[in-house]
Amino acid sequence: MSNIIFAENLTLWYEENEIIINSANFSINKGDFVFITGPSGSGKSTLLQSFYGKLQPNHGSLAIGGLDMTMIKKKKLQELRSHLGIVFQDYRLINEWTVEDNVVLPLWIAGYSKKVQTEQAQRLLHHVKLSGKEKKYPMELSGGEQQRVGVARALAKNPFLILADEPTGNLDEYSSNVIWDLLENACQQLDTTVVVVTHQIPTVFNIPFKHLSIDQKGTVYEVC
Amino acid sequence: MKFVKNHLSIIFPMVAILLGLEFFIVFDRTTKNYEESLRNSYAMLVVSKEEMSIDDFKSWDSHVFKVSEIEKSKILNRVSLAFDKSSGKNSKLQDKMPNFYSIKLNSYLDKRDLEEVKNNFLKSRKITRVETFDTLHQSNYGLFSFIKFAFSTFIVFMTIIGSFLIIKQMEVWNYMHSQRMKVMNIFGASLFLRSKVLINMALIDAIISAIFASIIFYFIQKSWLRDSNITIIQDNLEKLFTFSDIFILVAAAMVIVMTAVTLVVINVKEE
Image (cartoon, rainbow over all chains, first blue to last red; front, side, top):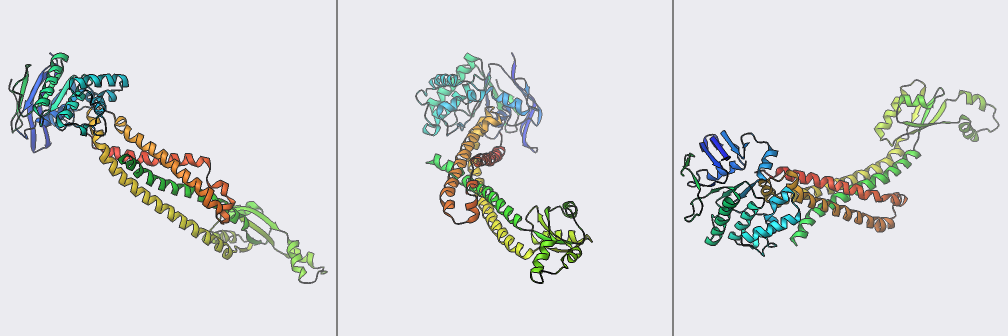
């Protein structure tokens, strides 16, 4: 199995005397579904941010999709990001754009035709149960609906890796279930690697998964 | 309403700056003609022991544009009119008389520069006297310079106000566009793609501003300036606003907005 994420002695900090992730060693393979858990402030989100290059490793090495993140160039990072699907707890939708425009953002960036964008938007919005809301603006939707738009956007370009930071953080049960189903399907049917940062692993989860846990000292353990 | 407000808040200061620019262009154009006529009507008088050529004068001062010798006979005739016309001493007197030259300069100089030209001429032993007529010269030039200064100050003031309003709008742009640009950055958009929406909006506003400024100036020319009794304007009425000015205004507006956009874009923190 090929490594999608490979970390060796990975150390992350914002200030040198305040280490967030301490010498972590782990690997995540293609098609894995991975939960990263840990108490508040343990560095779960920081670790996830290093996967899409918001933070660069301060020590050790990290490779994403075969790219060395310690010395990645801007252009390469842009290219890598265009092949990732990222879901945020605070949705990060573009408020002045319609739901449809938000969903097809990765396709627009990649230069796909308007026809392809529209077709893909229709398909994805059907999957996230938001058909008919294409022309609405994010502020006209509930939190759960906005997050489903966020997930649809992450899936738009069939990414090889989906990174989700507390995707069901403040959502109702219905929206949470829709999102878990979508992520499970992406992993199972499309062989996409999914990494989810969460406080709690859902009680009902239908596919096998890997579990990384981080303690308060920033040590990463592979639980299962 | 918000859409209109967003556009007007950049169009308004841009129009102010462009009007300032157009006023400057028009003022420069009309005053150049006026300056030319002042220059043509001015000449200094030089008296020399020997005959001089234009090259001699040019070698002493580069401001010399044209030299014409004042015929001695004409001077003598004028002088003789007051005395005895039948005097036969005219030809002898003519031989003893120095040479008189009327010197035109290539630009309209201030008092200090005129003094410098005079001193340059007097360095030559051949030159016995230089008359700059600087009192008359200065009365014309002083008024002209004051109007020029007052107008330039007004234009600079308009530009400063306009620039402050644009800086304010840049802060609004930063607030409005940074969220979208950050999200696009996370999904791998290039700097150009991230800025595209802002660039498009700014360029459209720049063109609208240039058109507005052109229309305003066209009406100023056709109504207010046409009816004015200012000679300098009446003489140059057709040169006030030309079709090519629209392109100058569009280009200037684009340079201003693109500078503003670039500053906003580079200030959005990348994630």
